[in-house]
Length: 247
Image (cartoon, rainbow, N blue to C red; front, side, top):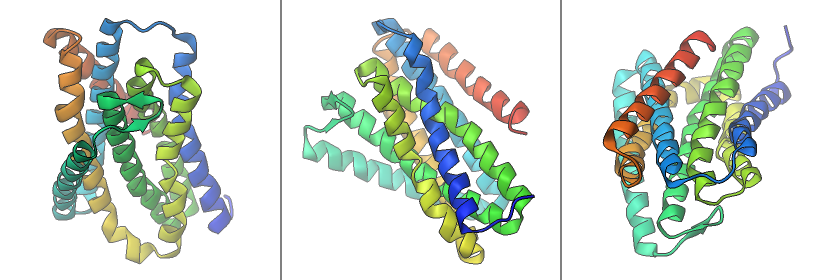
C-alpha cells in the first residue's frame, strides 16, 4: 500500500474536493431549461440533499447518537440565523445571481461548505487509522461528491450561472476537505469526537434548506405530485448509488 503522510492525505483530500466539480458536467449537453424543468431540477436537488442528510445522520449515529442530534440542532440554529442575517442585509449577488435566487444559492453554498468540514475530518481520521481505510473513505467521499456537485449545479445553472462557474463553486464548497483532513490526520484523538457533531450539523442545515427553500420554490413551478415523484426518485437513486456503488 501507499506510504501515508501529510502529503498523501492532502492529495487524497484535494482529489475528493475536485470530484465535486464533475457534477456540473451533464449541463454541458443541456441548453434552454424551461420553467417546468427548473421546478423538476430543484426537486431533484431536494431529493439528493435529503438522501445525503440521511446518510450523514446514519454515519453520525454509528459514532455518537447524542452528539449527532446535538449537531442537527446546532445546524438548524446556525442556518436560521444565517438566513435572517441575509434577509436583513437585503440584496446579495453571488454566482451571477441576484435577489431571492442569489440568497438561495448563497445558503446552499454555505451549507455544502459546512458539510465538507465534516467530510474532511472523516478523511483525516480514517487515514489516521490505516492506509487501506483512508483510501477507501477518500474514494467513497470523492464518488459521493459528484452527486453533491450535481445538486449544487441543479440550483445554480438553471437560474443563469455558467456551467464552468457552477463547477468552480461546487469545488469551492469542498475545499474544507483538504483543509480539515491534515489536522484530523495529525490529531486523530482530538478530532474524532467532533465528527458526529459535524455530520449532524450539515444534515440539520440541509434538511432545513430542503423544506424552507427548495420545496416551496419547486411548487411554484410544478405540481405537488410531479415534485413528489422527482424528490423520491432522486432520494432513492442516491441511496442506491451509495449502497451498491460505494459499498
